[in-house]
Image 1: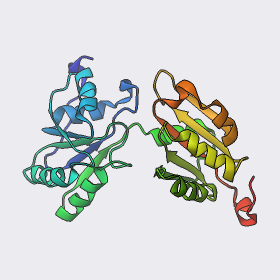
Image 2 (image 1 turned 60 degrees about the vertical axis):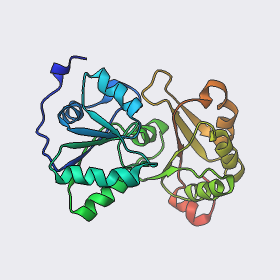
Image 3 (image 1 turned 180 degrees about the horizontal axis):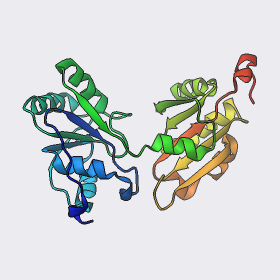
Image 4 (image 1 turned 45 degrees about the vertical axis):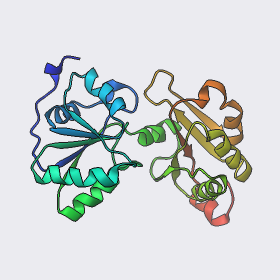
Length: 245
C-alpha cells in the first residue's frame, strides 16, 4: 500500500481518538482512520504485535504502546497526561471498535473525570456484521458481550437471552461454543440461532438453525478462529404466553 494515498487529516491535540480497525480483512479500514493513525503522536493498542502488522501494511510509523486489561491501571494516567500536554492520541483495539468489550471503556471513564474530550472514527464491527449475516430481525437487538466461562453462570446468562424479544448477540470462544450449544439445545431446542465465524476472512461462513443442528456440524476446523453467536428473540406474543415460537 502506497503511504502517499493516505489522506492528511486535521487531528487536534488533546482530543482522544478511538479508531475502529479491521476485524479480518485489512482493506476494510477507512481512509479517515488511516489518516488519523498517520497523524497521531502515539497509538495505544491492545496487542502491539497484532496492530504493528496493520501499521506496517499501510506503511505507517508511529509510537505504539500496549494498553490492555493487565496494565490499564498504569497506562490510563499516562494517556491523560499526554492529552493534557496537547498530544495527538489514538486508541485502537485488536479488531473492530475500541471500548466495546475491551479495556477502552476504563479510559473513557478517566477522560470524563479529567474533563477531557474524545471522538470516534467509526468502522468495522463484528457484532453488527453478524447481526446482518444471521438473517434474524434487526429492528431490536441486544449485545451481551462475552458469555461467562463457568457453565452454571453461562446457563443463566443464556436463559436471559432466550427470554428477550429482540435478537441477542453473544461473543463466545471457539473452545466453548460446543458447550454453549449444548446448553441451548437443552433449554430451548427449537430456538433458531446462528454462528457467524471468521467474518471478512478467507473462510467466512454463517451457520443457521436450531442449536442441536449446529452442535452436530460445529466440529473440526469450525472450532477455530473468531465467531459471534446470534440468538433469535421471542416474539412479543410468545413472551407473554411463555412459549417458544
